[in-house]
Length: 359
Figure (cartoon, rainbow, N blue to C red):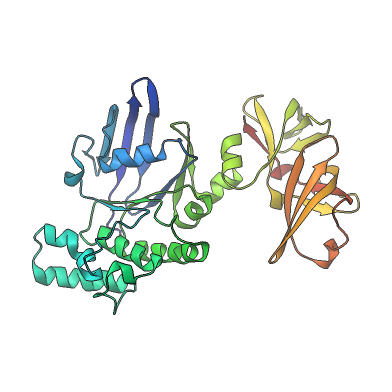
């Protein structure tokens, strides 16, 4: 990996209101130098507001935004030295690839020899050698996004903002560009603030992720931490699929608790909840399925309602007796061929795989 050349970004009690409507409640956030930090959340969660405050398109109601300790919250966008990559590329159609990428340097009156040196490095980094004289109309969507990425980074901005940069691309191209963005980040070492609605994209690219809801940051962590240790029902359900069981009673038992569910089953979790206002969460891949009784910590019976075959795995939807429909994923094997829609089955999972998260 390259030597870190990024900058630390701090949000201190930053907030934004429009009259009586609070778009962003007071938020505190630290982004480390050279980090790829993603912000995800549903529409209206506040992620675009936070991005706009950082870029300078929106003025905060209160709070500070600091880059390496210097408050930039009152500076206009053109004085913040922040690069931006948009969903729609925003390339100049009358300029070639080379002219688009070098544009930020030319308007800053950077000497021509230095422009040539930086331009060659960027074109090589984004794998557009041989295309310097082409116009945007002659490029694919992925190639146009590479031009936008190179243009945003060529002048060494303090921070690189990326606003849904891959959402206009098809799935295969998005997957390819995720890899290219990771490679690009390793080469330039900048700090990236990446906003997306795509949880998988954030998990693939980011060192850490902030999940937002209703103008608040719900939880911050690495993708695996957020998936395996969600702090709330919302986080569990937003990041991947979660089987949620409503709880009517918690009974301390050993190092964990027995859980009485709304459908009558008594299950066991090795986790001790911090409050009584919790629900149980089990991830689809944590469950086992069989036509005979299982010996796992937790078992329930149900009827298969749907089966979907995907390369290497099979997804089942099972209606638990007197309870909810649950989803589970299993590697496709011959042992599971006897399971069909309408078949009565047994589901099982360990106590450690049943999380208790706040409602």
